[in-house]
Image 1: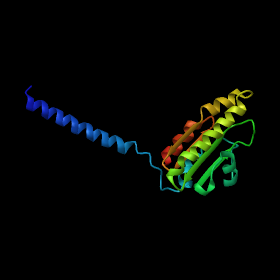
Image 2 (image 1 turned 90 degrees about the vertical axis):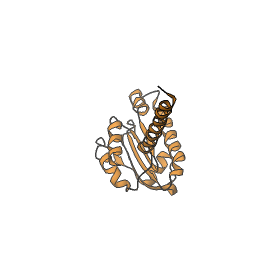
Image 3 (image 1 turned 60 degrees about the horizontal axis):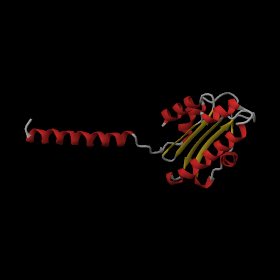
Image 4 (image 1 turned 180 degrees about the vertical axis):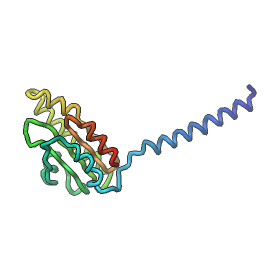
Length: 159
């Protein structure tokens, strides 16, 4: 292969790599949504286990350590049985820059719950260990439940 052909092949490979990189950036964009949280949460809430009860915004803020001034809207549910750690929290923040503090508050809640249940409720501790906590732009999803992955799939599909 002569030098001119080699440079042409390298040039094409570089262009192809650049195009692949740009496509990957667009596909992995993690922005939030402009949709109303009610529209996004409805499919998820429909898959909640029986017995889960809605929390008021004030109860959710206290439970999860949230700053309501930074929250545009939220939906929170928990099992009323204190021996069941099942919970669902969906939060849409006013500003994406507040997400690290919101996520940290929920992580602290999970850690506190793990410490509480670790020594005497191993099945509940296992649920907490398998909980799903994901953020996407200005949205936070948290679920601890037998079907946490299915709840997250419903949430993600609603976006």
